[in-house]
Image: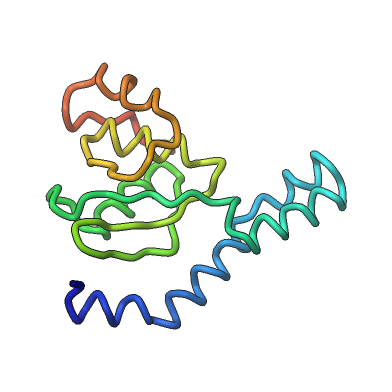
Length: 140
């Protein structure tokens, strides 16, 4: 049974509104237009409406990383997150679908346990090539 804080977080209207707004904000409007013109923009609108242009990642809360630390880590590599949440043993957040592979790779390479279904199962093999806690050089 969830604790009281988790229950209140589930019904936080401001977080849910921010999640909806951010799904539209981070949509690939320019890319959609470049690929298919106005039809692409309409498709991206409906993808945003259904939230299928984003990917939800779950991370273990017992890994020694706070949600704030994970967000700061991903931000250093150009990955923005939104739709933050937590329940039980997991943090959850959304990333742009076009950045999901990169975000998952960064997390697994750094040793942050991703507990959601893998976006790209190859990321686990790629991360094994590096020492635990390793990370790629940050972008400028």
